[in-house]
Every structure is written in C-alpha cells, then in structure tokens.
Image (cartoon, rainbow, N blue to C red; front, side, top):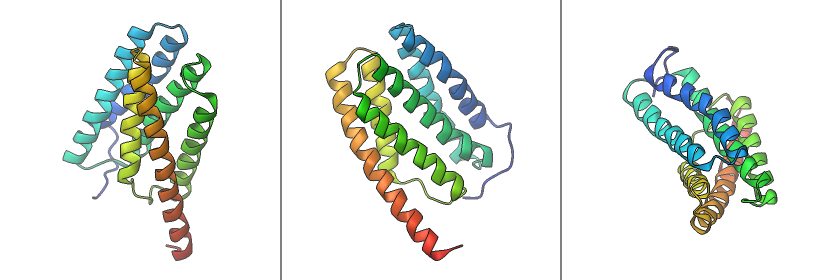
Length: 173
C-alpha cells in the first residue's frame, strides 16, 4: 500500500494521544493508582485499534508508520518495567522483552521500515496488551498466563524478523 507524507490525520492524532498517555499511565502505575492506570491503558488500547483501522481506510502515513510501533513499544515496555519494579512481573522476562523491543526498533531504523510486520508479532502485541491490562486490573493468574504466552510469541516474532533481516542483507536492495 502506498504511504502518504501527510502529518495531520485522524490516525496520527490517535497515535499521538496514545504516546501522550504513556507517561501518564506509567506515573499512575508507579503511584499504585491501578484503577486509573487501567482505564488509561484501555483508552490507549482503543486508540491503537482505531488508528490502525483509520490508517488502513485512507493511506497510511510515513510518520504514522514510525509513531505507531514506537507508541506500542513504549507503552508495552514501560508498563512491563513498572510492573517488574512493583514485583508483579519477573525482572528477567521484562529485561529480555525490552531488549527484544530495542532490537526491533533498531532493525526498523536500519531497514527503514522495509521489514514487514508479521502476524506472530501482531499476536504477541495483542497478548501482551491483554496481559498488562489483566495485571493492572489485578487479575494476576490470567495476566501472567497471557504475559508468558505473549513473551514466547514475541521471541518467535523476533526470530522471524531476524531471519528476514538476514535475507534482506544478503539481497541488498
């Protein structure tokens, strides 16, 4: 699909709103204001759903293709770090998850968005979003089950991205 160089679009406005929610959610989690954090987290998730639909309806924008995954990674990694600090998630798993996200962002910059989003990565993001929402709402067992499922999917997705990056490096565009 062709991308647009427009900046002011409804999809980009929703993505920007989600980005602005990230520090608010993190502060609420650190302050242990979990109900408000959960509501803000759900609002961020809703904006993620709708910005994607709006972008697919019209043409996706170049800035949206950068901001949307950045917003997802900041939201997921930030919340996971705070939940690890609070003792809700294991630190080792969060360190691996954040490192994988940093590699994904670096790969996206190096390959300038030429690595296609894979279905496993979308499933991982959805599972991790659901996990964090469940954990923030206090549903520990469900949240941990979803977190570990999303964690494994995230590692598999990272392997798929790495294999694609190696193939692209051999081909040289």
